[in-house]
Image (cartoon, rainbow, N blue to C red; front, side, top):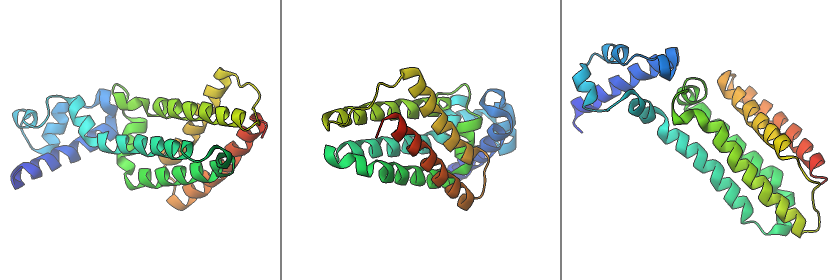
Length: 205
């Protein structure tokens, strides 16, 4: 891509970011984006075939990195010897949440798009995807406790879903409200303490 093309693409991205943040994906106007970027509609279609593809270009890399980071942490934890898992549960999950928070703050506008302005795109399902990953990880850990002779009492699946969803909604509230990073990190630490104690109680550990 030549320098002129790169500049044009950059202008489109800047205009699109502004438009999507102001109006959401559904309400954003491609005409306004093109106008703000100072390019023709024909020039725009030389880069993207649709508004959906433009939105994806703005958020896909960060979205996938975020999911992959969470999945990797779950996998790394499952690779720990079973007898070692209980004592590492809190510190490994805590380090992952800290890293995710920092990454989100480093890409704050992108995550504001994903969390607040992505309805109508596949990116609006971030919390659902994370809940699914966490639920699977929780079931795997419950199976480990069973093998260790420390079985947890049965957990109602609907309650489990509500609790896990609530945990991620709480986490993402830190980002949505754009509080100072240091304050968000403090709140995250308190949040982890709260949820860890609750889950340990429910699991009878």
